[in-house]
Length: 509
Image 1 (cartoon, rainbow, N blue to C red):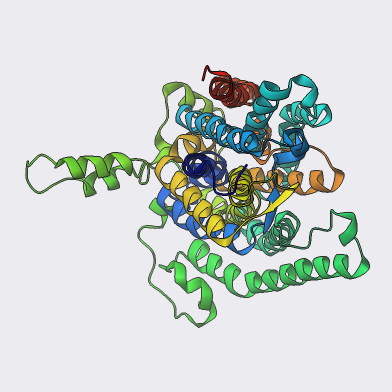
Image 2: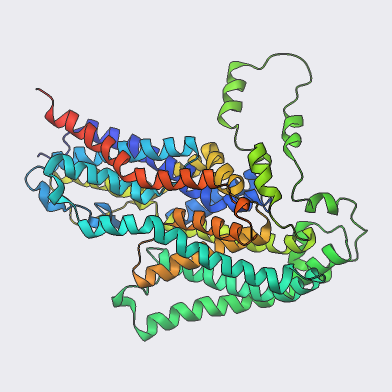
């Protein structure tokens, strides 16, 4: 193959790589913030605003400078020896299959693994061109195991975290005082773990799960950074955040959010008249947006205005209030605790979601960037790429923007499922879910166990829901649909990619 041939494949590959990254934002990133939105720690637009910076920052600042040409080496690049243009076409078809399935899953509210989607699509190409023997069977076996191991382990870990919180803080008559004492420890533990998560998962971090990095200096640097920063944050929490919470929740002063940065120097404020409204977890705030959309006259909106409102319809949606009668019945089975104590965990929940999103942006951007980087490499050289290929800055930036666009414009569907439809959410529950999922991912990375962050947060949600001591506190219909979507991800994404590949390569000429 001559360099710079088949430009149309390059162009189509770019389009579908962007769509794949868009789907990652709508599905994978949305589940990172779903529990925060579902528990009302954040509104949907606040979650999107934070994610714009964390996802894009993670992709650009800590994204991989090189990435696997074929995700998880599910098939060998050498099989395409002498026919790089066929591999180039295969990558394009894989991006079509993966992007179509992830976007449609987002539309239907299925939280799927975007990694499994691109792996399934590549499997489809391998099967279509070389047959079953071309696939790496152990990798496929690990993926099947992860359908059950990821949610199971995360559910147990999240349940333990929540039960500790429940019986040491929430279940007591003086829960607010207990919470004020415990919150610095929670911040130290949570942020130390999140920092460690970023260092472990980020391709430019100190990945001490790899043998070459398991030296005393590297391990000491990683642990020193994480624990040192964790202790520093715990001290700041005790000096600034605890007094802020005490004045806001105990003394009920009318403090603003920015007062937290200099609480000891803020003079005594008048008593708040809106505190109870702010703390009402079950309040329906959807009317705020509806009022904003009321026009001053009866003039029908223009086509452009209608299009704008349709595209941004999910940005200000109150997904926590979007409940069917069945879901309302599920929520009624959950035990409710004092709103003031729950509020203590809102800050923690936002921190865990933001850190997980930052690490996600640095790591999973390769799902879309990998195949397209392979296309670019073949286009420029006319030869097969190596096992890994360089990822230019412009590609990381464009994939980061696509991920942000997917979350902002289409992430509300997944947030409605994981943040509302499976079980009742509150800040203490959502914090336990997110921390349990993150801890599972970190531990599994060291042990070499196959886990999916999407599966982990779903399992953690179910695990915490079961702590209500009532099976009917879980919406088992939605859980069944989630499991179904995980199982069909490989064959559907692979079938679309492989079918398209066969149609192009085997059609009469």
